[in-house]
Amino acid sequence: MKQLLILSGKGGTGKTTTAAAFIAFAEAQAFADCDVDAPNLHLVAQFAGEPERRPYLGGQKALVDAETCARCGKCAAHCRFSAVQETTAGFVVDPIACEGCGVCVAVCPEQAVRLVDDVAGEQALYREDAVFSTAKLKMGRGNSGKLVTEVKKALVAESEAALAIIDGSPGIGCPVIASVNGMDLVLVVAEPSGSGISDLKRLCATAATLQVRLAVCVNKYDVSPQHTECIETFCRQQGIAFVGKIPFDPMAVRAVNEGTTVVDIDCPAGRAVREIFAKLTALLAERSI
Amino acid sequence: MKIAVLSGKGGTGKTFVSVNLAQTAESALYLDCDVEEPNGHLFLRPEGVQRQVVTKLLPAFAAEKCTGCRRCVDFCRFNALAYIGKSPMVFKDVCHSCGGCALVCPAGAVREEPVEIGHIALGRHGQVEVASGFLNIGEASGIPIIESLLEIAERSAAAHVIIDCPPGSACSVVESVKEADLCLIVAEPTRFGAHNFEMVAELVQVLGKRCAVIVNKASDENALIDDLCAERGLPVLAHIPYSAETARAGAVGQVAVEAEPALGEVFSGLWREILKGGAGA
Image: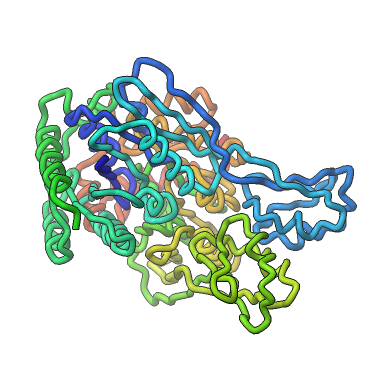
């Protein structure tokens, strides 16, 4: 299975809109949403039935047994995450702050602290004509990289399709690093602005440390042709494939709001996305570098 | 007052709102907590910038003291340690700096040492103090940088703090809003925007924070957000219409309230509303 991941660095540049369009063009049999902090692809993926849902156990959280607790406070004193607080009801662990390291368990002289499994989110798997793997991290939870890995694993385990299209998350940290692992090609959807270029460069530098193949396109390029030019130059200098420019198109926004994609209507953005997808298909067919 | 600006969805205009609010306030500290992709400095262009390194603690092992008991390796719940050769080694990206390995070592062979993971750039833009966090490339978590930014707020003499948060609703967002008196959610009236708005509104309400909403890139679809705010009892403080002119000015890093008088009035009104204290539910 060839895997194509869509990233952006900066948020809101059009990752999901682009991913949804690719899925429609390719009539993709396998796709996933790795933006587990703020998933949206399910809003435009068209499935008739409900997915199989399963809880995601992200790790463990400490729990203090109030009866056994002698209130010595060693757990709170040793916690690096300020997750243990003294209340009138004794020492209590804040499940959002707790990272499940087990230091409190180790220092408690009364064995009053234990670690319990924590449901940190939910995975969903749609298996109809196509397979779609997605997940939602519970708010405030960490460990998103591990959930991203689970989402990709679920897709690969359930589908033998030749191509998988994967929507990623913004930023350059934990979930992005986890999502890049094992990809054949990463498309970065860039925004033509000072912020967009700064974020693109940080993402490309991150990708370079992960040794993954990159391609770049610019969305809403007509908002700033000169920034688009800068992005093209940057790509040329870095030896990154520049695969196209998508115009700002109110029709695209309307399509998403109506739960469809830019493919379902004939519009300038749709045509540009189609050309970009053709170039990516060609890149994926080449032997990877 | 500490005001956190957050959005759930990326690209709705967190930095746009944060930068312009900071500029509108008489005396403000702007904190860029989106340490993976910080952008506020591209607009505020701070002067007299000083750099402050941010570190996290990583274990270092004294091979001559290590007896090979492997208690540290067994203790680590993040699988950040492996016993290779004659002493443990650490995988720095998965280490949570909990200190457990040093705690359980019976031979005193583990020492914790600070390792750089990013930096903070501190400077000024007129009346606005600017502090931006930058996570080093390849690092997984920016939480320690956000903590350091919030410490700057504690020391600052500025009357108000504007906290520009990362997107999403995960741990880094919770850390960023921890000290906030008011959470200002910037939402865009699209289907994706509405879905992510719900997620972040839920988070803010669970955390028990006072909350108000700004609809950015307002259009004829505003009801997508306005209706959700009405259901949750959240006040909408402003609708800022989409304008190609604002987008172009933003692309070249102009501070909108300095460049467009009409937006200056929008933000002055917004700021008065926030100061009245009535804002937020």
